Every structure is written in structure tokens, then in C-alpha cells.
Image (cartoon, rainbow, N blue to C red):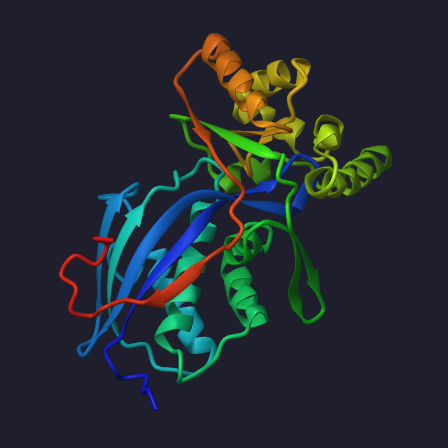
Length: 317
């Protein structure tokens, strides 16, 4: 029997996510093929050692305040296990503060790492992982696709968060445009009103239902299906260039939306050629630098596997 005190090491890989997808506010999320990787190793001592390469290096906390560490601690606490000493080696690719689920990826990295480190001691179900991650994130729309991949519908019940994972039509071709600027989710949410007109709520219910059908069966409906009246227009003042580019792209027939809380924008092409058309339009009309990232829909979600403890280059894979 494996003991919690044994020195163990795991490799975790977690995808970026784009939530809302236009009308599916706080409900729909899509996992995409952009990944943070992390090796977590328990130590015989106490305390935490964190090393970060790539995005966030020199910026994110490298002690117990690190979000991944906090998520590992929350997962251990949820099953009554003492937290061991930890060494983290992270290689981050997902942009921070740009609407691609970087905080959700960090939280999911932590809970999935805990699952791997405690294998044989305590078993985590999918519901357990989603519950711990949602408690930390505050809502499940990003953590669900990061955990399970694909398109997820997430909702809250009296007993906690729940989700349904759906396979996306193979014709759906995402491209994300990432600006240099950032926007905090807290600020974006503060711009929304406490209530909306009944007709706007009805509008979004219809478009959300249509969007699920478009993503899993009928990509030709994506333009109509991504219309929104609940959040994007209220947040436009905080990201005017994002708003202008979305209008430009939609006028050209492309299903463009704010990615998560922004300021990145997501285009859901109905075929790969639409991504190239979108990239040309953004390059021609943008007023600042936007990086076009051609992506696929991630089908696996977060993964964790054992990693050799003696490896001196933890991410040398």
C-alpha cells in the first residue's frame, strides 16, 4: 500500500479554456489546445519550492501563496490528508489576465496533481475534483472544460457543481486573438448590471440552446448562435479594441466573441479557412499587436501521470 508520506512525483498537463462563448454566460466553456505543464514532487521535509518558466515567471508567487499550491492544499484538506512538502516545476504557456482560463488552469493543475499524488491512498471522483476546483474558482464554467475537455455545460445544484461534457463537431475551428493588454475578471464583472431586461434574457436563452446545437452538430449556425445581450456590450468600455474587432469580424460573417472575461477574442470558424480570413482581417484593421493562435478543441482535459522522482530535468519531455 502506498503511503501519503512516500516521495512521489507527477506530471500534469492542463488546457486553456474559453468560457461564455458569447451567450452561454457562466455556463458554457470550451477546452482548447494550449497547455500549461507542471511537475509536482513531494519532499521529505516541509514547506514549498516553486519554479516557474514561461508566462508568469518572476510574477506569480513562489511560496504557499501560489495558486497551484493553494489548490493542492485544498484538495488534500478535502480528504483529510496532511499536506507534504512540495516542489513544483511549472512551464506556463496560457496567457494571464486575457480570458483564457489561466487561473482555472492553475487550480485544476493543483487538484489533479493532488489526485495523482494520493493515488492508492485516497481516490478522487470527477465530482470531487469539480467541487474542489469550483469552490476555489467561484464558478464552474472554466474549471469544468479544463478538467474534462471538449465543450462543457456547467451548472450549480443544491449539492454542488455539475457538468455535462459534449463532443464538438470536427468542422469547428477555433482561433484566439491575444492582445498585449490584460483585463481582470473582477473588473469585467463589475461592469455588468444586477438585472437585465426580460427580452434580453429570453434572447440569450434561445442563443445558448442554439449554440450547443451549432457546436456539436451544425457549425454553419455559429454566427447566429454566438449573439449575446447579457455581458459583452456592458464590458465593451473596458476593452474598446476587442469590441471593435468583434464587430468587424461579425460583420464579415465570422462567429467572433469575447473569450471569457476578455480582452482576448475567440473566433469559432465553421471550417479552417475561416480562421485564416479572420487572421487577415485582424492584422489589417487592429490598432495594436494581436497574436493569432490557431487552435484545436482539446478532447482530453487535464491529465496526470507518474513522473520519475530522480529526473533532474522535470519538464525535459
